[in-house]
Amino acid sequence: MENLNEFLEPGMLVKHPTQPEWGIGQVQSCINGKITVNFPDHGKVVIDGTRICLLPHY
Image 1: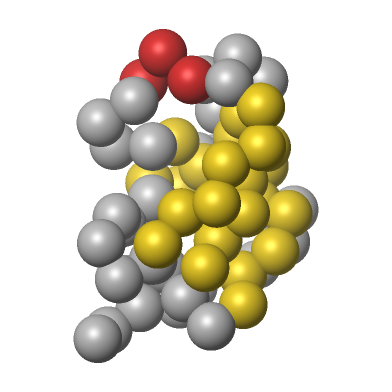
Image 2 (image 1 turned 120 degrees about the vertical axis):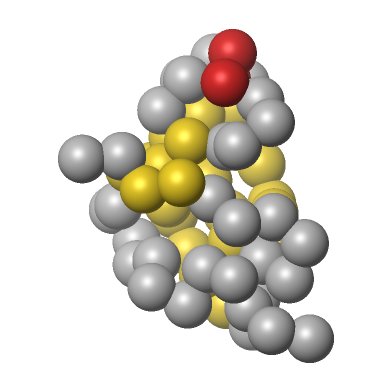
């Protein structure tokens, strides 16, 4: 399966496309398609990069 988040690197700010109430999260790691993101209003979440395409926040 294709990693939809290949461009992500630790420290980048992102939003979850279907969970806007989580706020803007910071990427902690991106290993083998698994992205760990720390969201201020939801905590640390591991996301399957083959299923969810995170939105970069600038």
